[in-house]
Image 1: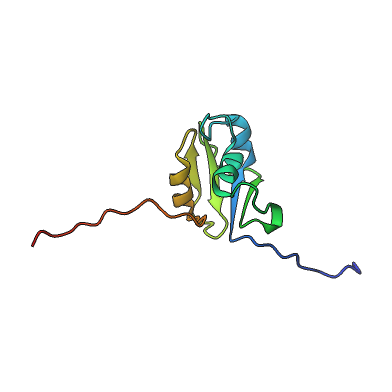
Image 2: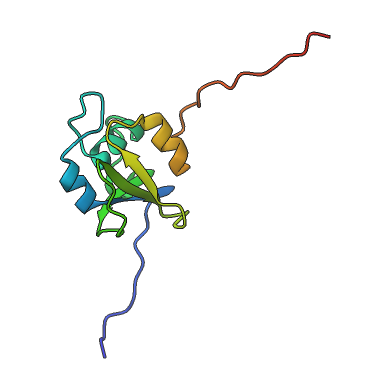
Length: 121
């Protein structure tokens, strides 16, 4: 039996996104403005403020993990750990705004305005 006690380590994470490392490696980029970033790097660049906190002090963690056994072609599997029943298959070149929305992430920025229908009474 171990003499080491179980401890906790605090984070500032609001969300944790898991990204398949195997899919990312097969795709070799495909995301970001120039299509040269992995989904993990593109999400971090898009969602984390420049010069802001990193690691456990950031509001978001994007972590590469083992295979989800979905293995799509030309896409990467990602999931918001808060909603593990919804694996997202993200094709190369996908719009990061849509990826953010589909993962249910809130980065503190305002969303695109929603059009409101006004009746002509």
